[in-house]
Image (cartoon, rainbow, N blue to C red; front, side, top):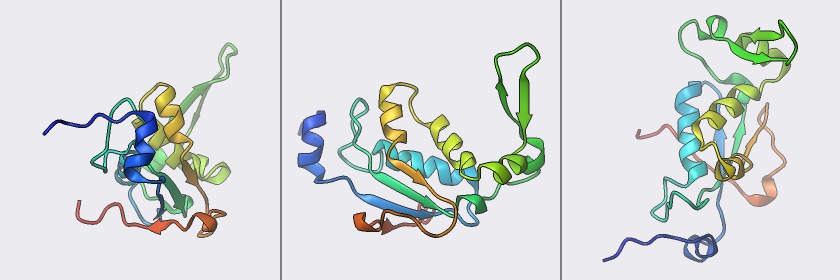
Length: 151
């Protein structure tokens, strides 16, 4: 039997429409959660996975502000960026980031686990991160899954 290599047009024929999954991030470890989310976004959890085609599903993450970092990472880890001006290097800890933009931790971690090309940019658009338990995607009827069970 030959291995199937899907094309962009044939992905929808093989799997039907893209599924929507709902993930609750409350009490979950950041890295473990985000690595599982990136697998679903890439489509690596499906038999129709093809590296050069976006075969992944949509993921909704709720309670993003309640994600857990192990050890002293909440105070010791630094997110670094540069403003572009001389002496413009800036640092923030995850504790400071959670106050201003609570969804950044999950978005940044998943983005770092996806390919750095136009395919990765298309994949990250299928992830929707929200603070709190509500989301505006109830019309898509997302299937609630526990990504960390049996792993």
